[in-house]
Length: 255
Length: 255
Image 1 (cartoon, each protein chain N blue to C red):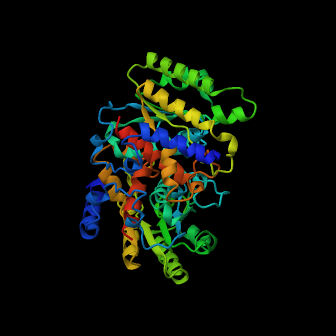
Image 2 (cartoon, one colour):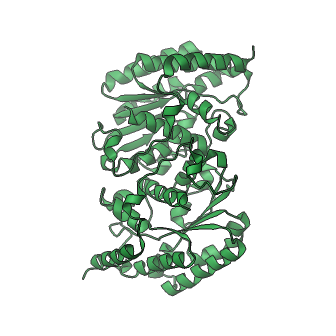
Image 3 (cartoon, chains in turn yellow, green):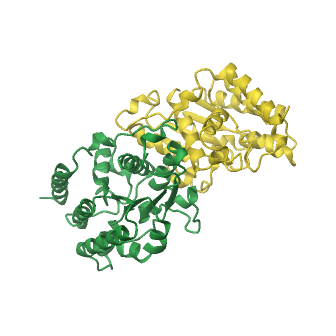
């Protein structure tokens, strides 16, 4: 049994069990015009804060010296910018305040270290977290974390978040990998899917929204080769960033 | 009669006469999912080249040392990146090659100076040009151009383009200004609308697609204050960039 087969079987099992209506069909691009802002996030107060947190995929080269909300350079070149631009356009009347505080290379414990200033102090109304690929990836080299550490740290982070921000609406993104990518090898399987399983279980346990990015990329890879969406298997291309943004917006709309 | 009134009257006249079905109602966000690529630009060959040309609004801080197509950093932080990301996602199977060659500060004659390498050599299938605000704006200071120079240079540029690229599909964007912006004063009216009129007449004369950005911004400003869409009146905010990208995509879809 190849690693690829193992991973596919694992994914089939978890997707069948838990994806439900959130399959590929529901990930179609949704339309929200400026004239119908109330179809999207209509429960949010005016001026609500949207915070994107995570690692390099979220960071996407943002200017970390720029702390302004809704600033393209502060939001980077990835899915956070694309999603924020769509929100600011389609829900203009809400005047949402969008921040990206992702930092390249981060693992969960590094989010924890900077959580007070980079999350809690911003008092987000919606908090999106995508974290986990480095918790696994760096362990292939000099990081001594395990999937148990990832789970323990991630649960503690969310517990702390819910205590400090009891009304925050949480979106957890599934860490993903495209095995055809140049940075990915056999060592990723079947280990990495265990991190994905943890992220999903945590989302269920904390009753958060969940974006099944692995399914998003797998479905897109049926249309175009996997490396169209991410060249190295970890970081999305522009097309992959838009793919993520659309899945994010679809999830946001359902909050 | 105030300058504002003069400008509004002018716009009412030209929009009534020529906008037709391209009013605000048709600028609603359109939906194109990955599963229906043929609803958008279905006449384009696979691998077709899309080129964005213009000034700072198009440039939007792109990395000019990066000549790669479809690269977020080469595409900048503005409407060109947002539109290109949407195209690469919604029309993935077409594998479009998207370039941004806008340069901050450019007037038409500066496009002409670099047209061979920054346009003709790329042999675009679709060429989008947004130029004109500096042709007027810089003339308030040390540039000696006039609206006649703008028209003459712009016509010559398009004639040269059509001769070299007879099959190119052209999109001309209307130069726009938001008079509430910090960089805009009374000197802009009624002179600047003359440049807008020229751009529209040239688009008609060369039978190109035309994006009525002034109407796009004016309509959006009925929902949120004008400076939500552009702070200085010339350069769009993130929301303004998405507004432009959606108008651009709507126009592209109708090519």
